[in-house]
Image (tube, rainbow, N blue to C red; front, side, top):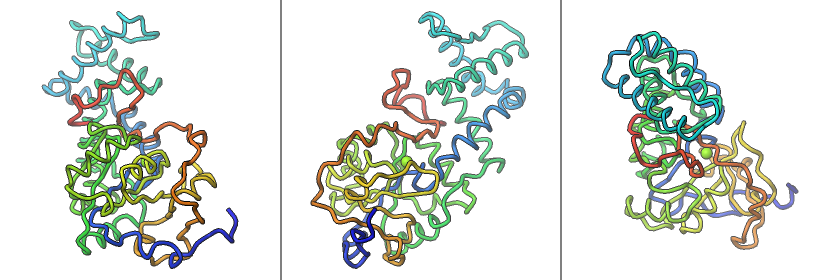
Length: 313
Ligand SMILES: [Mg+2]
């Protein structure tokens, strides 16, 4: 990026928040380090699965989770899915747990996103959050600026691929305390994929806002593109650990590194390159997949059963 192209905050829009009554915020790579899911939540499941199943084996919920995994495994076998691990229906507790461990680890190794797997993972994470064994990571600037937005009577919404229940748990149990008090409502991919304009149109209908009074913050250029097609204001959030943004992205989108820049108090970091209108950006730059993986939906995954059985993911 050439220094000469960089625009200061004053030269850019008077404020990103002008006329904005609602802010829609992504989670992974925006409020929360991408590594949190991969380096904290997923390992937690692997490390605690056996003790979770042993302790809660007779619970109705656990039995339902096992039953769902068993039925999925039967389908996998029938479809000749390579390496599918079946779960006996009449085995001893030890045998069943051993088979479930094998099944879950096999699925997680393949990064499968079946509803059945997500359901059990969601229950394990719920317990982890509630017992305080896991606290969600959020970037330091998130909590104070959520508070400030709310003080200014702007509504905060979350839109993430992770299920709504997982989103609520995450914000209720962060290292910075309970941030759910700042959040008006949550959206997940049951409203539609984050890379499609229509999803943002539907969210606007639900929150009853005009597009120009809504700001969408995300780390993913494809999502920002879809939101801006729906007329929303957008800004990309560049965080440590995120995929590098290209010059094209800097040209096309406003980029912030901290939520405090929303209030125009961090001019040094407020980046905006000269743009020639809101031109098309090159989609070849964005071959990376949707990174949101909060026990989530993968829109391209045929095994993924959007909108079903996800209350606890
Ligand atoms: Mg994200």
